[in-house]
Length: 485
Image 1: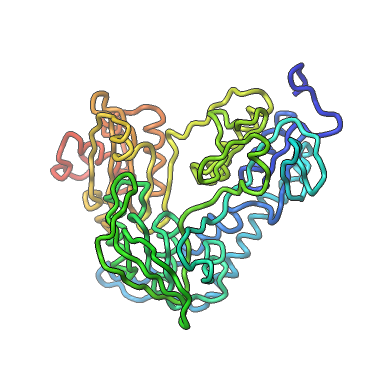
Image 2: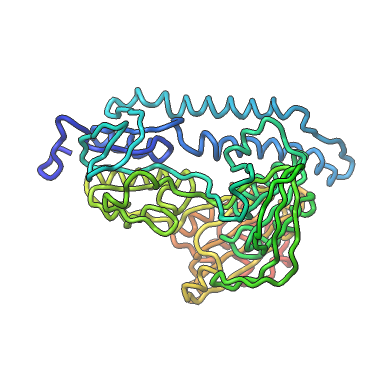
């Protein structure tokens, strides 16, 4: 920061980071380690979405629900019986809150004294007349990194303004569980929380406009819908929302079945139906926290959903102002937010040298079975006009699944037909989340399906399924002996 082009600011800060969540801390720490004087500006609860109201509390409760389900599911082994029950929701919720508070303290609040180059400033930030205003006072600053995160998006369903509804945040903070729950949205949040509440004894219906998990190939959403159905979760996919109303017993959604083409144009194909529940959870995605800050007046371009538009170096349309994490409206994972924020800080301090690369980005849906993916899906690859080949392996071809007596799932690989190079893959399995990183490395370092199929994998592991899926391109793996190939 002490060269001719980036002189230190005597009376201000070299870098201001707006937002004190995972992305904000990553940016602030990185900039400080590079010698910058940093203002980390937070407003509200420190730590952001993941630790407070997202990843940490949801995964803690999902694991608890898995334990309840596991007690019942143990009967798949001959000679086993018994069950596990949710006896005290308050006790479970309180343990989740203690975990959140502990991690927020340890991983955020307690870190600040370790970085003397970072000054934490509490206050709402905005732009006015080209100046950054914090807590109604102007701040002298060199570069700015925007990391304000996102919040639950609310769809334009007629009547929703007059209905008390839950978001993922309030659903994880319930004082008591409802008897029944309508989940609107079939993406990651909808299916994760829908299955969790169902396993804890709530009658759950999931409604979505297209299909479950639209970001992965259709086979996986279809399979998950079947598995959820076995657990008693009703799924209404491909529906349009006519209106929602509050009733004496809760809420009532009126909807119609739709047929939608690839461009999103939908036609009604079935009669109107009504769905009732005690409460409704809106899980239709996330809305970037980009409003009310005067960004567009400052020359910062937003996309149609409010995401801050950035280039490959995370710089916005306003020179010297960068953005990273959920506020950009893409790659909504905490690890991608931290990764992007680190690059943004490096570029802000040392000049634009580091490009954002999500080509080998893993994504995980923490349902049971888990759904994990990396790289291109078949749909995405074909949409790009690529000449590809695919393999699809049911989990009952994986010895680990047979030994565990749980063959729910499948594995799909996508490869370039000419070069045999892996382009992407998806795995649905009870241990899919821990298996996807092998495929991440295979894609990152340009492996072919032949090379993956020839790699040594430990026997009786779920990740061995990737080897079998790679071999499926050329041979019938059902004709292999144990450990052969």
